[in-house]
Image 1 (cartoon, rainbow over the protein chains, first blue to last red):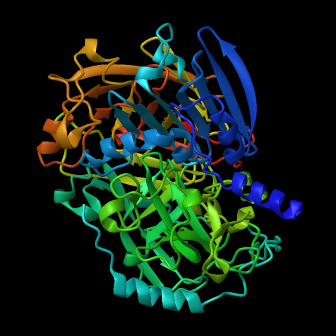
Image 2 (cartoon, helix red, strand yellow; image 1 turned 135 degrees about the vertical axis):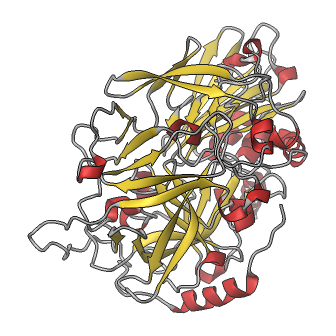
Length: 149
Length: 441
């Protein structure tokens, strides 16, 4: 019985929604690390810190954490785009609303969204993508949004 | 945009394709010996194809300005009879390999099989949240108006076909969520598998890389780009290079495999209804593709300029990777906020993302190659809403945002950069001097 219970527990924990990250606590970085299968390196900067997740394929995701412990920005580069649903978390809805209200023009281009709640850009080309996102209200007062890079 | 796939035709096509499996596709992925060499070297063939900058497949109402189009012929591998020529295919130096809409295809092409023996499927994502999804097929690729033919990937069996992607309007399998940056919410992720959403019948990717993924997909399935779907359940798979969608230039049977040249004439400040130019295959292989005095800029491992400088700010690859891309229909650089002091405004409404200055402005970026060459590239930016609203299709002076501030900006030299130039795209691996490939202009 004990074994079965433990197994159940693992099953339940393992299937918990691994939801992160923008606007969530620093602990959600660990979830991202698991979902994205990356190695985490932490780096302190003046007024914030960076978790840099490096994937096996060379892709890199950076998460910018304010002293209060919330993730205020993310940046990525790699040969594929990362799982942005995972990285943007609840802020995906803001992105969706903004994109759905824009008439889409044909032709390939960077994707840029700038609202009060979310600033987002996705650019690059096949085999080399990059992008950034931050939540303006969460950027620490003494840190420039330009730190998200 | 409306979603109008040709469901019936596509359904028939899939039924045919599903029943065709070529034994000559290297199912086990092991390289087979080449049997193409005759000992006399490749033949010299006509190597210049016409290209047009115009509205392409969507026509004027689509307002797809600055698209560059050519025709491509695909044949069942090795066949000279079972062929079809498809017009309005985007000439794209920013991608690698041929992609064709299933709705534009009437010729039957066999599936490429993955190493597990199941038909290979591919999911390709673009930075603007559009994606293509569909099977990988084997084709002989010909460029109309030239003698250029690609019948197999280098080193593979004669007439085994070159892997291309079929963009499936009605796919046999739903697109796997793992390959997309977000859930397929309508209006956010764009399924670019129809002419309405792709704006073209296909994409001819002739950039610096021979394959559309490379060693990352060969060694691991973790990039979630290639899939097989045994029992209807798609899972990502590792795919050896020779089964990946392949840049046809490097598979040509001629000697013109080391790159391409795009020649476009200049376009005046008010634009043109259409512009005719040429896509020449090979660099320095024939009289018409000599590199002459063009300056060479080796790209880095990402296919970017290692560095560009704009307004005193240095943008470095890969985080702010800058590049030349005939598939981009404007020069995307800096951002409207950073350029406000110059008189740049962002366009509004349907032209958002382009720049709408009150009067024409001049800019310059300095680009650097990995081989330590550098030069200043000058260009003008006029009011995109006025230009596109004029009803013309080719403009040398459309610009747009690349980011939201200096830390996120980069430079994408799209079609306006190509007017009045010969732009050389040297393939990675084709030159010992520039192993990553290069651009020259």
